[in-house]
Amino acid sequence: MDIKELTKVQKDREDKLKKLRSEGFNFPNDFEKKDQIGDLVESYGSLTKDKLASKKVAVKTAGRIILKRVMGNAAFMTFEDSTGRIQTYFSKDNLAKELDSVKELDMGDIIGVEGSLFRTKTDELTIEVKKIRLLTKSLKPMPEKHKGLTDIETIYRQRYVDLMSNPDSRELFIKRNKIIQSMRKNLEEAGFLEVETPMMHPIPGGANAKPFETHHNALDKQLFLRVAPELYLKRLLVGGYEKVFEINRNFRNEGISTIHNPEFTMLEFYEAYGELGRTAKLIQKLVQDSVLAVNDSLNISYEDKPLNLKEDFKIVALKDLVKEKLGLPSLDTKDEIFSAAKENKLKLHKSWGWGKVLLELFEAFVEKDLWEPTFVKDYPYEVSPLSRRKDDNDDYTDRMELFIAGREFSNFFCELNDPHDQEQRFTDQVEQKKAGDSEAMFFDDDYINALQHGMPPAVGVGIGIDRLIMLATDRRSIRDVVFFPTLK
Image 1 (tube, rainbow, N blue to C red):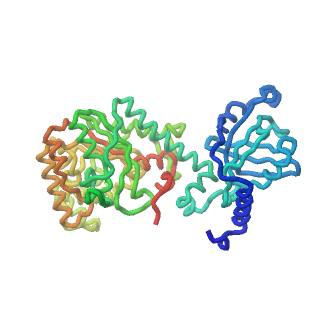
Image 2 (tube, rainbow, N blue to C red):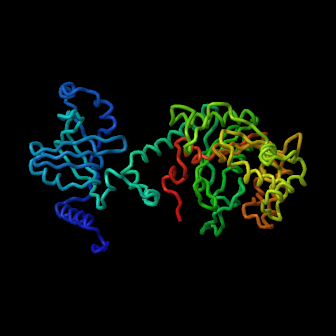
Image 3 (tube, one colour):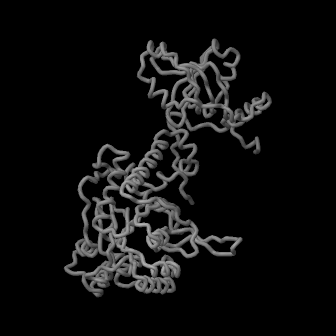
């Protein structure tokens, strides 16, 4: 580190560390923390001054200094750990000459203290420190205490600074954990087994998406970071498990936006002998319970607009939504679908069939206006390469997607378990890829082999956890709910 490039504050702290090192300081790692600050506040915060004095509560804890006030023969500091914050009192009576070293401490330093609890004249719960030990010297200043960290670029790039200075940010990620726990608890209570599947795939599959490529040196083999765990989870259905789920990290080589990050968290679960309507009810419960895990009501606000998640979610056919939105009398034939696209100036790719065009109409004109929770059903066969065809109309599939606040939150369908049909669809996907569709699926021989051994009828579900956390915590960007988002 070039000392000339340091700010005055940083140089002062570097000088302090140099002096500390000369006195034997070596960033110690042998302090035993016995008390969490949050536990102390919860257990003793309501006791009166006299009751607290009679208990003579001994304390040994540690945390980061966030406020400091020095006065002659005494000093007050506020420090915090991951559970809360508390005031500390340092006096010459207890620390003698050591008080001079205490006064040299900086905000951001991490200290360990031993002492006892008491209440000050202003009735604030405080630790009277009898012993103090510097554990970590902070060489860079914390953000200004009243403003905190406000630069959005720094918040995302230096999340550690955001977390240490902003309790709301720390609470947000605790809420993220509560939401994931809620989903896991619901599925385990419903008899689902949590499993783990590979994150490096020899053949990318399970979703229409462009993968990241990597290389295994020892095997001299090309591999892909998974775009979805679907095909491996369905292999487990073939193997005999009937209810499985995975909370997984997926990677898609796509654009970055407020709702897209190249790596993201998904919940996928599969139920043998499942039924689409019953699965929709389970998804509704998962969403509602996730929101209730961090909110007091299902009537919430998102992006400054009211959102009611209490009522049963609507179920509407995709084609009917497009027809209603565009004011069309009919949308039953391929010609009518292409005509609607032309009239509404939708740019078409030469490889698109009517099913892809219908989906593009939906995404362009309908999706953003689906504010209240809506299950959209009956997706065209062409854009559903892993879904089972409908019995009454094989141009469409037994597939649904859940939309809330104009965004997709879940995709689920009756799984295709006919190996001949799946083989043909993989072949069709390969042709689409040759025609320029970089997100079309690859042909997976081993998955066809698995289906040939027999997979029970099943329903499979994918839920975007990051988006659900955004909804439940009223955040507008996926970067807010991911610790370390990918940035330009």
